[in-house]
Length: 257
Image (cartoon, rainbow, N blue to C red; front, side, top):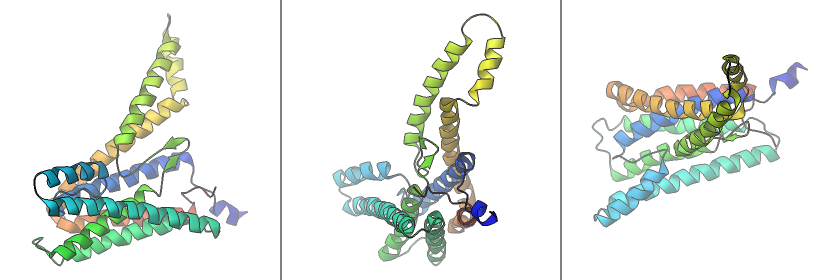
């Protein structure tokens, strides 16, 4: 019985905390990468995609190619994560997230080591491309590692979809709250607030709002610590990812279905 409980999957509440932690990591990596990699985003491919057009139009094919490479490598990370998860599922390995998050941590650690050899950020183009690969592959791996929290679809490396879900769920919740509190009596408000904690739209609104705030906090943390530690600031997300690996080894993050 003890052995079976040690492989009990992570519950939805714990997954919310994990999603918030991973999103903080993405915001941190994205802003540090933006500073160190010529304003190329490591986690948000929408921005890189439109900048391809911008730089091509303004006669900067090298800048456009770098952003195209970022998109390609991010997608490669997504593919790698999906292949690892499917292979683990077929072989009965339940802690596939430990593999993908461990790989992410190693890629970010490699970024720190390599960037540390060029303290003035005057690295050769080949080294720059390798640094870009480390950052974008890491974010691609993360983005496909945790995609569901209960019935809610989540993405931990970009928050546009989370803001959309926040608005959709929040508007439905407000209509529900209005219907519940129509009429006289303060008791209606107390009852509605009590029931809110069990309402799916309320929970989804809180989760998606928390994910957005976590990305913002990761960005603030990255800017602040980069000023003090330069590329070594990424060691903090590496430590956090190592903790998440340990969590997955104890209680699997990804569904075995």
